[in-house]
Image (cartoon, rainbow, N blue to C red; front, side, top):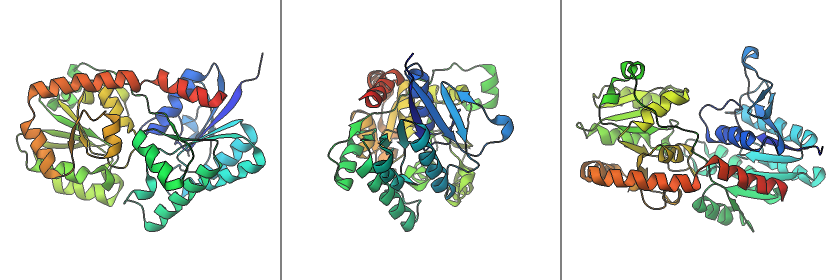
Length: 363
């Protein structure tokens, strides 16, 4: 029997996946491709009692470091160095922390695939130094990678221009791991608003995800009901938003929900999903919402237009969002729901995404 090619997945918090598109990607490509390849996924600091040896076809390697913040630089660097020695292919999901180490491939001669995920070097939540450091790492990684991957056509164009790349592959995210859920008495007791018509939003609390714009709009829409899930207590930005908007009767601000069925109950029973992110490529939360038969109101940037094939409802400020909510008919919402689902079933499935990665691994 031939030995399987070893693929190291670098740059995630690890498995099992919670929030995070890269973690979900690591989960499903290892699940779908485990018969063809041997996967290693690196995991951040975890209590001993919660550590697993394998998960969904991937061997798990733990480091006593966090995958976020300043520790991510060391965490990703160790992952890359380990992979140069013990794997055949390095799949780097986000090179912003330690991507400059990819230049060592001149020595190790491995196959390296870099997925950028978004334009981290433009996110205003980072300091000027952090943005410059992120861009430096991305630039060096792009020069020495065998394949550069963008998850969105608009992101591909940004990468080609920023780093003068000769080529860049497009591989989106899957979203068909979610499921439409019915409302039972248990969930209704916990979330009484499920009986109401409500708009729903999900995302990390950071300024480029525009939660401030979303909440300020609904403050002026007392007859429309918003449920927003985020890590509000994670930073000053989120805490200030909670303090300012949590007392409005038509706004419910929920903390992160890690149970897949529970979050799907909320998403799949909402009236409309509002995607307010501005610096993502193909945002996982958006394609998941599309797979859940949600109509989509999206922040108006090129990447979101590509993801939704220019067929969602788009806003770029408070006035335009309020106008969409006040003037869009039920029939228009129902029609948009069908269109978004058709797009998602064509493009955003893990079977399709896994095949595209498999092609890179074997070519």
